[in-house]
Image (cartoon, rainbow, N blue to C red):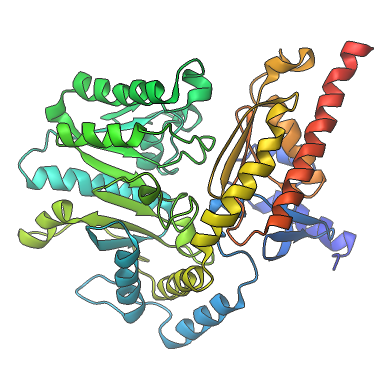
Length: 461
């Protein structure tokens, strides 16, 4: 149902008057008349105040894995609010939802990750991982092991520590970021750095960048390596075969902890419960958020292997870290039911057997489009890398201009996507059907055609 125009405009003005948005140029937002206001969702679809229907190709922010409109999650939240709306997990106390969720997670995670710490966002989870790593080495009498190796284009959150762990230059444009002792190396991004190489050779080269950074810093000073199995917000950068095995071997060779950031990849996104399972990674620490509750409640988690947790369990002294809402009972109850839905409906298998192949086939047909340079997919993740060099009318455009133009047109035609540099990325809800994937591909294809025609016009004028 459409909201009356006057009511919609009043809401938009209130937003402009009072609401500060994340990652937003507020001057530009005002110049464009304010935000699009989303009213409700069902499955993979969203509606706004004008009654426009949008296929959500990004699952919110990579998170609404079970889709919108899950009333059973609302019922679980209401039941838990009525029973125990809040209690902390400090001071030697606990409660049923957080205990049950901890046990459930350890049964789904890669083997050996038997203990879980809870927070409220991916940023907080990665902050926690950093503190755990440094606490671990301090407990072992090696406090000089402080250096964390990360990668360019990585996204690990937006707090000061998490933004420092990330490798996006746009996140490092304020004083004091990144914090000391974080080193960034090249990403396994063949489109950027390895187009002319065979996949196996590029895997070796990209892994060597990690080793070179360790040696430059001094292995005795390096605490950990952190990486996303597939780099999500960095542009759905799918590593070449063999890359993760080489990186893992390097970490073991120099006795460095391996942190696997599963904030985007976890809970079915890659066609397994975790990206670590997809790439046969055996991490010491795993960070999670987003799909843990499908975005229905703010919650994140850090799973810790026996090696790292031993100093916490076996030595005197406390781990001086935590949040008011660590293991919040309502968030934990909703997350537990969300995991049950994923299991009950076979969504991990659905991604592996249906969504992944359909996305790969559908988007793969666009690889020969005049504006497209490369298509990358894995499970329910995809990137369509545009190539401005392909057409005279786009060669001199600033980076990101072309992708943003296509993205904006996709929104107008009913498809939510995201522009990253000169690419468009997709991570739809895991419940998406093959017919809905076909709709996604059709809208994107028509928008690419329209933009291609627009940029070709000056050449024929």
